[in-house]
Length: 88
Image (cartoon, rainbow, N blue to C red; front, side):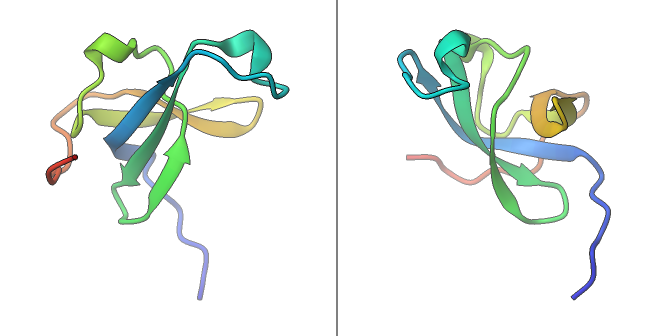
């Protein structure tokens, strides 16, 4: 198996708003969104959407990678999202 460079594009699969978390480094970040994104290349990963209020988040919305302290997070991206199945 070889490393493959990712495009940085993804689609929001599901998310949850976190309003209370006593564990560092999250204490100072509440509220925040915890999410699962489908990468354009196929894998699904846990992430944190940024610049994306909970009330504007929707399954299937396009995302693009951003980095915070070297860690990949995702923000709303341009263009249509990837096909999303039902969430429930």
